[in-house]
Length: 322
Image 1: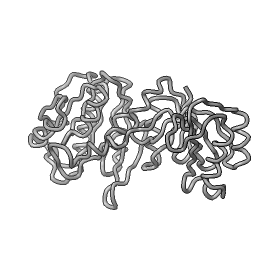
Image 2: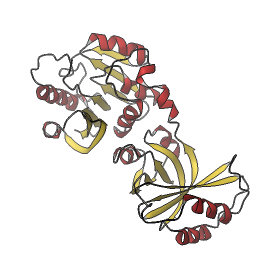
Image 3: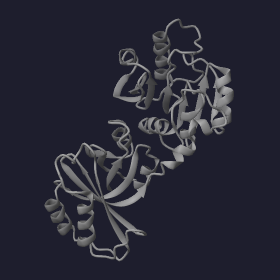
């Protein structure tokens, strides 16, 4: 099924990488994407998408072109419907002076059916971004409020500097994990990545060298298997793990066993990740700086992303395969 995605805009590249793991990305613009997806219900796991729509068509981002598109589609519905439009700031705004309301008015007048702005059963949306106007029918909205309920400060165990749930879910998604897969986080900390894996029906395993963090993780990730261990000497057979997602330690207040530099820790941990990961599967690792040269010595780099947290911290995301 051809789907249209309205993206959150919190990252320039990660939303597209997420979509590509549940379908085949065919087009993208600022805060908008189009993809062929065999299972539309799988889109509910996405973290950096706001709205998922059935793709109905596209045109140039002006009123005349949009009117012609609606005329060609000749849509009709017996259900109460509403028409909405979004002009992506910094995208089509400079190219098209027409307001969102003018596009919404066209939807309301050119679709045959009863209009209900307050209680619609069907919603049609136009997304104007850069040089395109995409049009679709809403299938569902992503429950982003659920991530807020899982904020680190609301968990049974909290430690400063942990990753927010939306980012953790995104990393699990771009690892291309599926329900029933075994996912390992060898630097699990408070268990945020494990929680997201649990919610997606995976067998989540977490390890950490700090017993205090493992004890805390047991309070948060109650369905995960947890162990105190050294990420440079993992207690798992070769090629036994389906996916690995982890946030590497940054060097402040970190327990390190038998390594005298962070580079050595990264290299040794990546060597172990490569050993235990199944062939053709993915590892997603996050660091505070670019370690692509170290990672390339052990694995193949598929993707690189960055996420600014605050002025002194930008997360670097590497998607790797063996």
